[in-house]
Image (cartoon, rainbow, N blue to C red):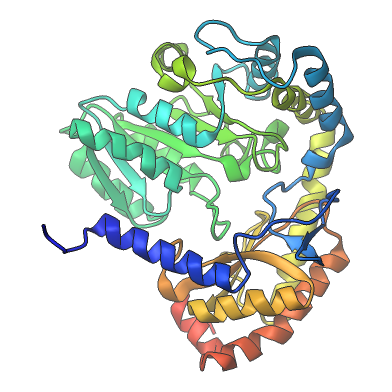
Amino acid sequence: MSSIKTKHDQVLEIVNQVATIAAKLGIVHNNTDDGILDGRHISIKGNKLLYFGSCGYLGLEHDARLKQGAIDAIQKYGTQFSSSRAYVSSSYYQESEHLLSTMFGGRPLLLLQSLTVGHMSNIPILVGSDDAVIMDSQVHDSVQTAVQFLKNRDIHVELVRHNRIDMLESRIKALKNDYHKIWYMADGVYSMQGDYAPIKDLFRLADQYEQLYLYIDDIHGMSWAGPNGTGYALSQGDYHPKLYLTTGLTKAFGTAGGLLIYPEESSYNLVKNTSKAFIFSIQMPPMVLGASIASAKIHLSDEIYTFQKELKDKVLFFNSTAKKLGLPLINETDSPIGFIGVGKPDVGYNMVRRMMNHGYYFNLSVFPSVSYNNTGLRIPLNRMHTYQDIENLLNEIAIQLPMALEDSHSSMSDIIKHFKLVA
């Protein structure tokens, strides 16, 4: 038997090694000690920390209306409704999907257990045997995993460099005469560094090339952007007739579930009638749907725009403060995902540990999620954070980063070089 490791085995080994190192340092695989969460703090091993790791960007999971919606649903339907949706759905599904469809201009949509499940249901059905798929190199792993199912059917699949519209157009020109449809798959907001897909350029290409169809995962743009909180992609223009939009309720929306939105009825009906998740999987519990109904009603009111502005103002404050302190802020946008580059992984490990010792906890983006020398501090902001929280966090990072760099025999110039920043 050959002892040569496959690429799959090598990737698993690397991921396992990275996770093992981070767990030994106490910066991942932690558990909260809190009896009650307030949206700003968590307690780990008895230490109360300011928490900058939640993707609940609007803090709606703590809204009393969502909590009451969940409680009412439990009282009426119990903790689950154990049936395949192919047979019967709870009444909460009908109301949830109606309200969500209203948010998205009345378009047909499906609400499934998660967006990962949604991609695995959607992509193998939508992509035909005579189609090709082009993925942005940084599209979410859940999309890339679902695309793997296509390889069993010998579907042509390729990657293009991140956000390179020129390269994408070149590949469309090369493929357009050989395939019925060309699907471009990307994120609306990229989860690691908070940068955006060039949505307006993608709409232009979809208008220009008959074969091009867009499949966008906008889960990190949901709620804090767009009309009625419909996300970043729809903040850039009207719903394109060749856009297959996917998003989710697990981030800023405050509940759970994956959302698949269709530009026309035929694709919606095809997925609903044939997807394994709809036919064979258990449906979402009534309590989640009850909370989702409450959140959707907030999104359909003007209150969502107040929440969006509150968060945006704090994001702009974060950006301006980071720049004032000379911190290497990567891909400055108005998305709530801040990313401060630190370079080598050991600098990142050092920084997270230092900041935990000073009362702060946030995410570390490290290889293989990002390139080896592009390790960064991934800092999601949410509406619950105060301006003082943000200022104190960044001031402490500014104090600790030079010492962490020195510990690793690295420097700010190394960060500038690795991230190709302007000095």
